[in-house]
Image 1 (tube, rainbow, N blue to C red):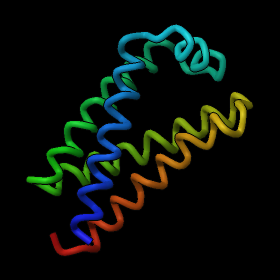
Image 2 (image 1 turned 60 degrees about the horizontal axis):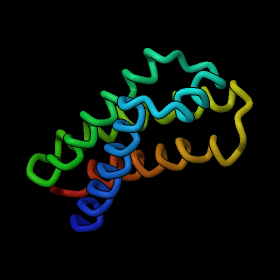
Image 3 (image 1 turned 30 degrees about the vertical axis):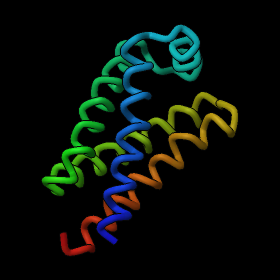
Image 4 (image 1 turned 45 degrees about the vertical axis):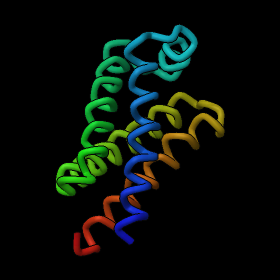
Length: 118
């Protein structure tokens, strides 16, 4: 189970690193899409910083699991909020599914990490 948790942690780290960088760099299409569902530009940039920090913490999970667990909890909360923005903004189902699924993956990592003796 430890190997699965570590692989999941690294995959999520890669996903959130890329997602955070895209937000920080300011890819115009992504910013326009975020504004279309009501996400202010400043909040979007802040989410990018948090995603990059969480990605680093997910990698650190390999050496210090409590940091990875904290990151997974934080990301789960962020993905619930992101999903709610997509739903309130009446975004396409495919766009809404992305943060919803990522939230399920981070929640899965949290539960497995907390219930497995690391």
